[in-house]
Image 1 (cartoon, rainbow, N blue to C red):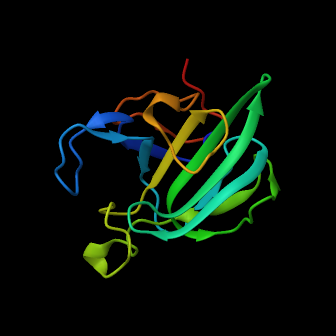
Image 2: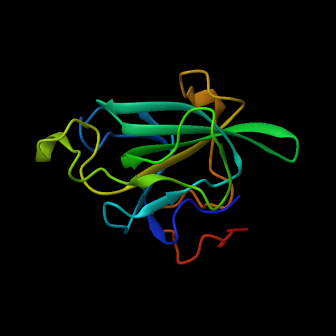
Length: 164
């Protein structure tokens, strides 16, 4: 596993929270939000695998990419939301050096005339789930991304930084 961005800071945790846009209480947040990067910053595959799904301009998540990976014989799906651009296709094999898209979430926000109502600024929503993508991200399958602390303010300056 590598980080999907060269640098970043966790700005919102995975798990149940009060939704920052809608105000809904006990809303499940399926990944971690990573801030500290401008729109257009390259987003890399966190692990090698195969692109299993792409969703464009979704009303809550924007442009989204799902990548099926196998680590130590176990299947996972990594997912990347609020992308400004998508640089891969379904079925494409990717590796750690593949730029799957770019950070979005700023200009795509409905508050700025965009289509994504679940973002307030430039960031990447990154998540990992056990098993392969099936069109949904159920809470029971979502895990804290390996190498991350599920802690607001956790920062790194290299993709190879691995928290132990």
